Image (cartoon, rainbow, N blue to C red; front, side, top):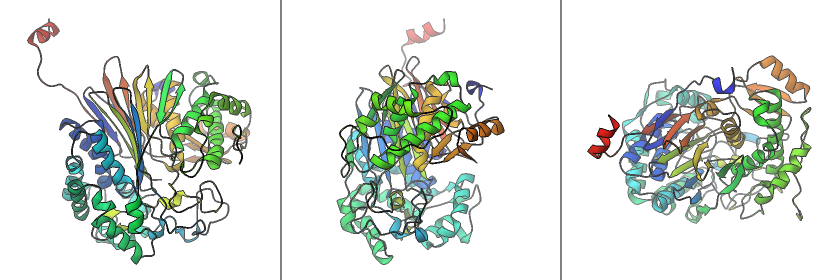
Length: 557
């Protein structure tokens, strides 16, 4: 079976008037409802995200972190950076690192669970800014579907129940979280109704009073009080000092397409373009999908990107990040020449000229005017810190786990520093028009997964549904993770090992990807969401109902 013939587990949706994709059908429905009620793609995307904080609570919260990537029908692009910030009381040596780990593991898991793992979240401020700056609807209407889901309840999915089961002992440590997600002390069963009345009140008040309710009001003081009572670091001063940033996206070309993605403090967009530039010098279609050569090349490009990420990527306010050099044709040619197709290698960070020195969610939305949004947000690991602020129903992030716990390195902890991310909300243009919008959860595996989906569509000729569901690879250090979906397992694994890779078969790499593909010739939008989460596309077709009678007669002659 060729890549183009691959059968998908889910089906895409096609529409003419608007499309929303996300990692939960109710959230996609909230976004589509917003379009139908007169909102644009930004309103729809933010309504979807608010809904995801209710129905996909293990992945996102209003006190979390993320990015919004917007491309207007007139060609203008903008990104909103609402990523998390390190509290002012933090110190580079505040955690005790576990030697020899790649995932920032520390003794006692202090950067993963509990109040000390929480960073200052910017999600609500970023979403409210996007709606005010780019949307058409008041915040109260954008948040309304999420309020309804929280108050009336929603059916627990098998996916949600499985994540609760994975985190059950950690959730039990926090009574405010357990009372919602462990009703009666037990993990809910698929189909059980989960209600979040306190969170409904919080969201409704946010819609009425705006982000000031958190960043300069009672909700922020509730966070600060809970931190003070439980050894956390965040103060009201930290919350009031939080700022979002509008930034220019990082942009690059690949085989006649323009890639528009998130720049620092996300490493994702830069490394997607960097790896695509490396790939541009190879005949990828001739290699074929899932072959030893294509998997090997993917692994080597990922290892190169990770070597540079470790050395150069950080908060652009504190670190000079050489983005233009990293995505340049010249640097891609230099790196491409270092790849040996016969064997795996270790890579070190490149040297710029004159240089001196599993738990996120995503949605895409497109409206009838051609505006398109790709946005990724998180509370980091499943259910974040596991902390719910008493009386609010609001979960808190554990974004401190993203920082390097070893002092003196590029991404080490420092007060006020913006946390580094791998999020990659990406828009691909073709002939000046939108072509793809996509993204995925998956922590450090995000940009590799989005990169592979883009290659799947452009080089392997897959549909978007096939591209987001296709098996993925991930490589960092000596380990090459391959999803079980890659065919001819024994032969592929043996060849990868012969070339020097240490192969590990895994169920999934990164999380539930979703996206939208636009056909400029027909004006149709096709939404897709993969099997790795509860994702679903929801679209709107039809028209305004007012048609010239002569047109109708001509159509039916």
